[in-house]
Image (cartoon, rainbow, N blue to C red):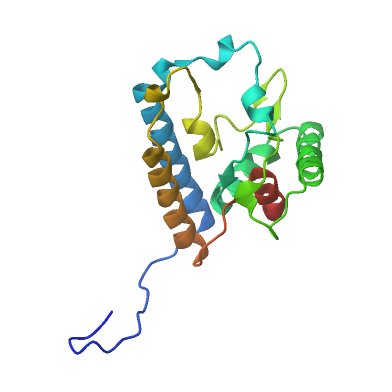
Length: 188
């Protein structure tokens, strides 16, 4: 904020912080609304996942997957994983660690250039967090035959901006968006 003579003044944030639980509730609502919008406006033009001849190929293609998530999304994913039976939950966390090692995922380099297979996909079941923690990039993704049918990239950007603002209201500082395996490890 500047005064009339152009001298800088200290900006004091009056933003009220949210508890993590309240923020998770808001995240679930905005994610559900976003998923509904994508379903209603775009998915009817895409091939349904149930009819895919290579189920999970999009989630397990290490040349393709580069989904980054916020800290709050990682917390939501971890809560979903915590509700799984211990044996399945442990298997997912083992896949998370294996993925980090196998693909050399780390925060010391540009994480947006790092690709990997998603440890949240389980053959025969699908995405383990599909109903309660699916990231924005995954929500917007589907098998569209025509590029013109794809949801505009601005929709993903706007949704991620909303989630980023929610993260700031929850954690009081900017939080890095990390590849799914690194974000899950950070929370766990």
